[in-house]
Length: 327
Image 1 (cartoon, helix red, strand yellow):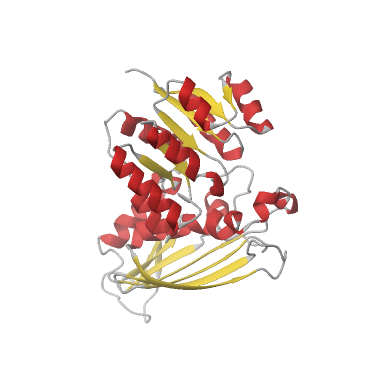
Image 2 (cartoon, rainbow, N blue to C red):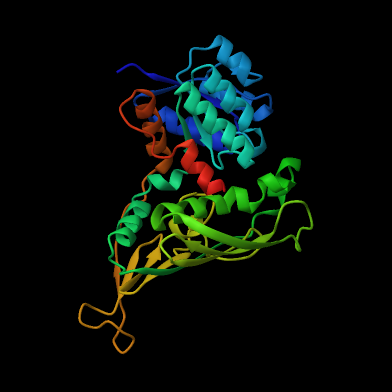
């Protein structure tokens, strides 16, 4: 099989992670980096590939099958549209764009050109997420009645030193909550309505410190979710799973799905029920752990991107799908 030639736009933390996944993939080959910042230069030198100041010059001079857009959210649109115009497939980090208007332009351009846009909601590549979806959608819980979850962490103060991270586009709603919304949509089905409140009372800058929301799913189930990046807490996906080595694992689950027959702790799956012949609160509740290896979702994502480019698989997360998560 011929190598799938990939390029990275944005050489920061996420771009570096993608570069590592590409290096481990037997099919993918990193051929260029586009980023005018020092982080881009460092990544290009480390990976021994050409560096370009912008995506246009890279597309004009390199032979590329797909690009990975890992810039700050407000800079997703231009390189994505440029790649589509050049006939190059795109994996763009989540959220798909900063606004629904930009997302609509990308969806339209992808449809017009026939070039794929995948979106980096990488949690969909974890077996825990697929198993939870199976449990909910096959009726193991009975009828899904309610969902409750949280993502609460205390980010380090210097995390927000870069000016772009002080803006609303880089706040925890678009950076962190977007993962949770996508995961809930994938497991529970589409959201019919949502209301929310946000607060910026701690840092007093443009981006929010906290958000709380209430959802109604098309199935009739209700959901609540609370988010903050200024709270000392063990309750977040990263802490529950240990996905990111830099953030110590707590093992504490952060989401619960509750049905008429059983409930599910998530992401470390524990199925809670009274027993087949004991349907109510007069009987002991039993918890059954469902052990699954986390694995490397970023590696699976790169492998899938290569398979889509090669025509061997259909996209799991399209631009249209990701736009609904942004909505």
